[in-house]
Amino acid sequence: MTRHYNFCSGPATLPLAVLERAQSEMLDYRGKGLSVMEMSHRSSDYMAIAEKAEADFRDLLGVPDNYSVLFMQGGAATQFSASALNLTGRGGTPNFLDTGIWSRKAMAEAERLTGAHLAGGSKSNGYTATPASDSIQLSDDAAYLHFTDNETIGGVQFDRLPEVNVPLVCDMSSSILSVPLDISRYGVIYAGAQKNIGPAGLTLVIVRNDLLEQAQDSIPSMLSWKVMAENGSMYNTPPTYAWYLAGLVFEWLKEQGGVEAMAVVNRRKAEKVYRAIDGSRLYDNPIAVGSRSIMNIPFTLKDEALNDPFLRESEAAGLLTLKGHRSVGGMRASIYNAMPEEGVDTLVDFMAAFEQRHW
Ligand code: PMP
Image (cartoon, rainbow, N blue to C red):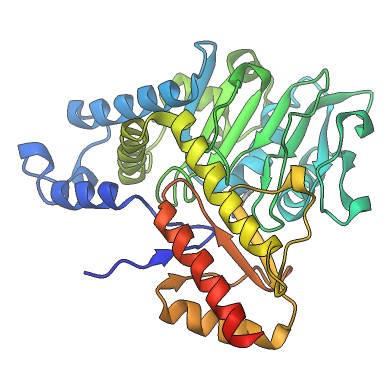
């Protein structure tokens, strides 16, 4: 077996220990004579898996009792619409910070469904730094402020929370579980699973319970956080296997020392890549130092003709999926929790050797 280092932005690399555990339990889950995929979601065996996953997730992030944790489907993009419909039943306009492609997509969806107000963003600095709180201008009827903690494509991340007097709704798809959080400062956090949680097909939502009462009457049941909360995320058949795998990832995270320990490693990994970029003559990352993502690091090569050789040679060296998003060009290294530090060390060594060979 050969496992390469996979720098994909998502679906992303998973911890090897988790994949091995899933493999060992695949055909016969703990002597039950069937796989988790084949279990009724209402069976006591599956309920134990589901409840343990939620308890471990709550533990990892210190989710307070007055918040619900929902295991939903449809990806983070479904929450673009769900958040608008769940939070505007008593009127009010969703407000947004525009920090890049994902926040704009979230706003566009709300615009269609409920109307939306642009409260600020980083267009004026070319999306190279997150906006300061004193630049945010909420509408008078703001129902909440939505922001994207980490712009997966742009590589821009908030280093502090926006300070406003309305609930914060945060898309944390590419940064959840990477550093400790004070959940009580948020109204809602949502995240697609396929980066730091598990396989695609599952979306986690953390919602303060008083916000469960503000949905539009016409909201589809499958989008309603209240319906999901009242039914333990089993209003219909949940994505059972993805939920089980997420639970294995949460167990693995606890074995690593939890989110606090991951944060130390994540910051160190990111520093290594930024140092490699800043110390070179070939590579460039335009993001302001305080707004640099520790999860997704885009970089361009000063000679675009070297992009193809870089991709060819990195792949041959066992470094996969480094091609940047088409809107940014160049490369992007996604270094979520499950990317081992040795993977980052190998990347950094490759970057230096490539520069020496070609530049
Ligand atoms: N938000 C962010 C920050 C993302 O990175 C992504 C996916 N890359 C999405 C939303 C959309 O997620 P999904 O594909 O799960 O709908």
